[in-house]
Image (cartoon, rainbow, N blue to C red; front, side):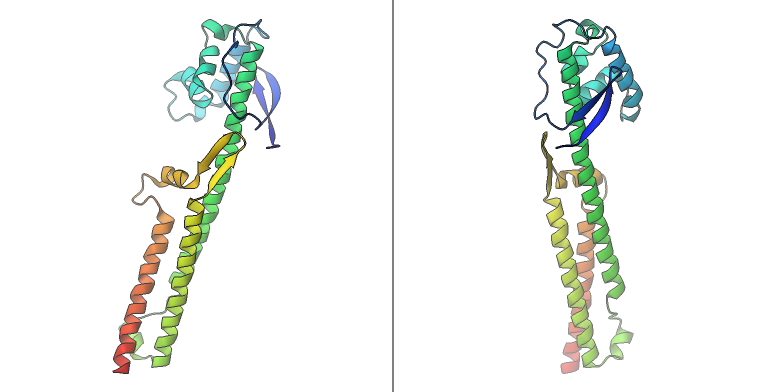
Length: 233
């Protein structure tokens, strides 16, 4: 990935990019001479100000948030006690490596969510169009229809059902997509959808809406088939 972003770490603006493929090693993080006597404190303060307010459960404080967002090793090294008193070059690089990875993961997630929004919009549009276009099969309407009109309504219903089947295939293809980056194996779209809708009555609302509309198409087609059979007797 060629994208870069500037991150303020310890009061110093640093350009970061999605170039790391593995998590940072903790070897030598606090063994060399300190590059900034208050570097760890400044990183913790910046994290507390910019990240902690957006954490779902902030009861664990800055240390727990750093461990969750970056890594447990980085959190220990940045702690107010022990090695965290020395902001060494290895520790600085470890922090930046973790930040690089999190930024890359966030960009991947953004692409996944954009794809999900587009897919949902497409599914909703198909359901609305089909619902507005389905021919009536009420008995009062059927009594006024000649055979030719009944056949025309049946063909229309069948064509709309085919549109729904195509939309279902496209939605399923989206669910099977894996979005990847240089620093992450990939995010399965299906897993993200389960996370987004897992607490709803249905985990796959778009597929459910399309499937229910397919069933309505088939119901109306069956009614038209029965009416045509009566006319042919």
